[in-house]
Image 1 (cartoon, one colour):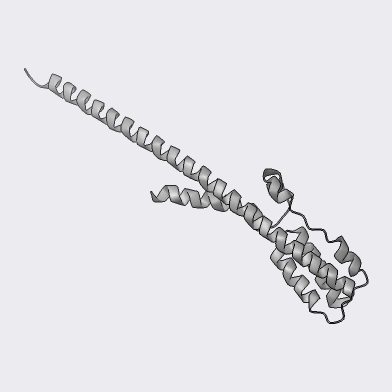
Image 2 (cartoon, rainbow, N blue to C red):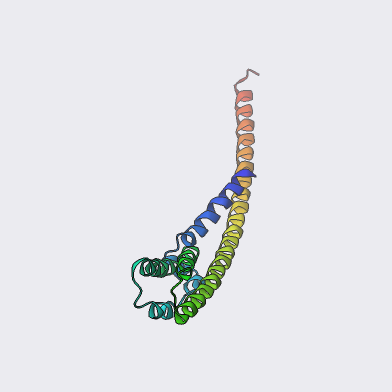
Length: 163
């Protein structure tokens, strides 16, 4: 029973791996739910258009993390920006709005990953059951063939004995 379980684990990892890296690639084509998960950073960019130094660096890091679908990383950079004492009301609003989007999209992505992993596990289970059935059939055929060979050998041996 261990080999089918190991196969299920490997297939699940392979199914989830494209989601873990956060890249926007062919995994999106296979999973339209993931492709639909987007975050609008335009308000934040507008509110921080004149930002400089560390604030600008965190803005760029947050936007890059969002485009890579690294929502936990984006949240960390946005929190650093929110800790800045000299933010305007518009900047605070834009940050809070984007933080809300990032949290929601992160939850959606995790839910999608869970569904994908569950589907992969179901497929792996089916494949493992099919493989086990095929092995059982092959073993039965091998036993039958061995029995026939033993019977044939016994008949040949009897034919060789003096009468």
